[in-house]
Image 1: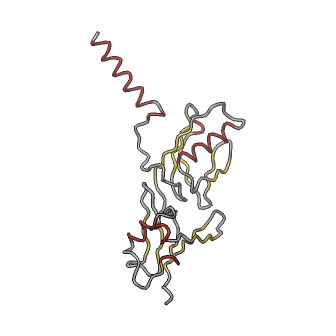
Image 2: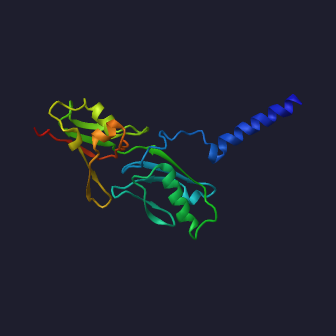
Image 3: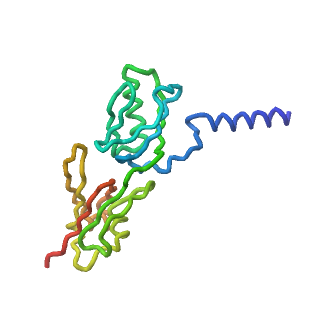
Length: 196
């Protein structure tokens, strides 16, 4: 009796290690991680070796994936990218594909903070967690006495190279009236001088 239970436990352990849904390999990130240009993605399509492999995210934000061609993945959480690939493969190629993405190597993940903060400069974004505008301001030494916190701007390069300006309204975030804003690699944070 004890021997059969032991065999059952060992068998269950090996099943969990080899089953894709319970893979022990950590992805070095949480649900907050957003895929960035330069990342190297290990994509596994269960029982489809020809579709599995290493894919580098290009500067235009895409990977070139077998059967479906270019797929835009920059800015997506890993689960969102998995769902996107699953839907594309399901559309005429596979019946019920299981897709798993692991970020094997992270690309350059810097932001630049200029203007009236304690230590302006380039800062790396963490590879996991949720990098936000408030965390970045704290990391750079906080606002100086001359700073205009509510004038702070995030300048972001959207897919295709278009520049987008975001006004985070720091006062509203600090008072809880507005949610903190997540940062993306390449963001430029500008903290202007206060007008008297």
